[in-house]
Length: 360
Image 1 (cartoon, helix red, strand yellow):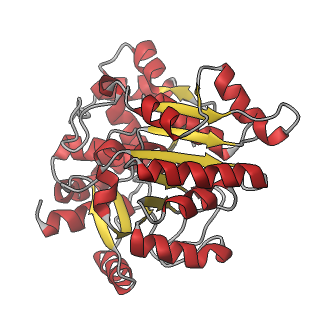
Image 2: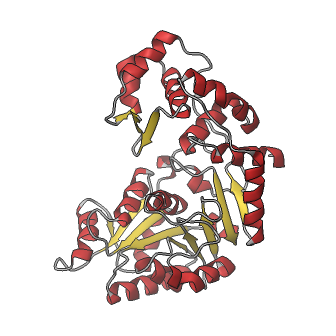
Image 3: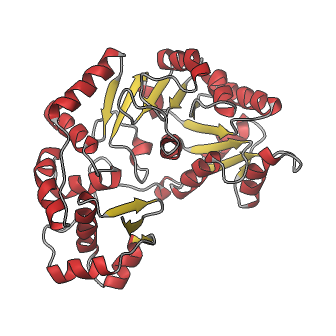
């Protein structure tokens, strides 16, 4: 891939209303980011709106800011873009990283858990991370307070990857600034956000998909029901990765999420040997195929007005699965995907988790 194509891909993903799903569809249809950039305004017009492409100079400035702090880009399609992450639905087309990229190519295990974790759980997470490192595994976590911090502390000497929900130049939480710098120097620091991006609540669930996507399996150590850690576990399971949990006392609310995961079929974890055994039996056939080449049926190049109206007529304020829209419309998937793409570029469509869409 040429440097111009890498630049164009970054420019494409930084343009308004172009998310990971739309990026893949545009690449599948047009073959290159340059062609996609030229086509976006026309596609948005068909959807009844206008689209703007981010100015090239703004992208150049972003790249300069990243380089100033010693970071580099991994663009989807690069040979060293993490393979397992590329297979994840909604994988970020561009990553900004500091550190040893080769760590992402080793057997990775995600460790997540409560921010207000108990001292015992933090101690267990730190010891588990150390033991996993001794057995050659790389520990992936989110550099948050509690379990994440303990996991990185235990594995920073043997191999750790921290995924953050802000710019590569921002330390969050502030008390982990030294640990974040240590991870960047001795492990790998990863984000999908441009430099200067402040940590916002909505960015943490998105970060979780990267944590789950980099790893062969996810271990949850203390998690309350409906916590972010359970989101990571769900994403791992949906991607065909191993979901593991450390059991806890029924009297501790912080253990309820883990105990529930085990009831639902997650592997019970007591030590590093349990984790290694679990990730060793991952069925790679369950991992979605066709990432780097943007394989799959591309959106159609032409849609009749009656077909466009039929698809729009099936959409409403309530989110509905794309598969259901395809079934009810009776149209080819490529045609439905084209209409959805046009609407999204026109800022008339919102995409939701689980492959659902709604009119915005």
